[in-house]
Length: 276
Image (cartoon, rainbow, N blue to C red; front, side):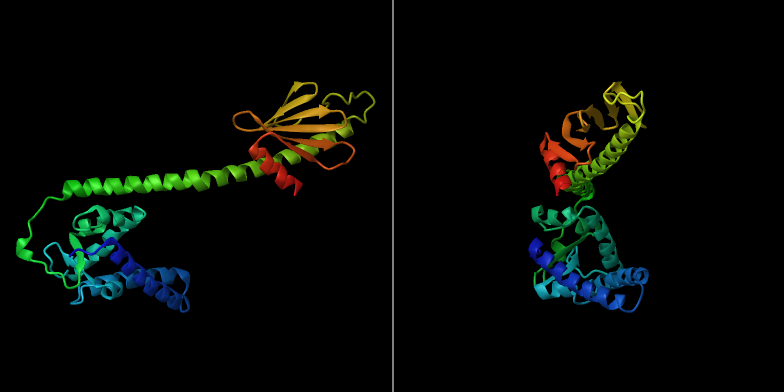
């Protein structure tokens, strides 16, 4: 009697196709801000008027053969249908986990079904209003709402850990590479300039550099990397947050290209980027 999740999902896709066509048509006639407002009103009226009409169903539901009723199997009023539409916002906030909980409910109710005290049944299902027994759903509704929100938060956290965080770390490493190359170029050029002075010792750093601290005569510790004087050039050891060295850059004084030696997998990625 109660409509399956898959029938409801197909009905949703059909209705979504209707809204896409509406959006395209409206976008040809007005600006984006007006389109969003008008489309919102049309979606509300589309569901509220159709689901409170004798059809008791949107176009998608009519095609798949299901309809909306209240808890006693009666047709919804316009305001009941409106309540049902706006309660879908709660389901949307949970990234549709509030929709798929219907798969585990004996009456196939979604979160917005429970909030609006409605149900979706087969078009020709027999529903006896007199057989309905009033039940206290407040406690179970609170639990289901919280569970749906927690599942949605877990889903977002999973996306962040699996996609956003690695991408952020990759971007951070490339930004660090750019900063290190700039500092390395400046320090090497300044050292070459300073060693032109008669009293200068080319084996030690002569100038002080911003945000770098001299650890030894030939080593500077900067933010996230070290600069070391070597015969014929300067080496930059780039560190991770764990202080492990990811890769080393070699800047020759004779004008040759900067070379990169990787010490980790992340360092290989940076060196490949630099060499390409």
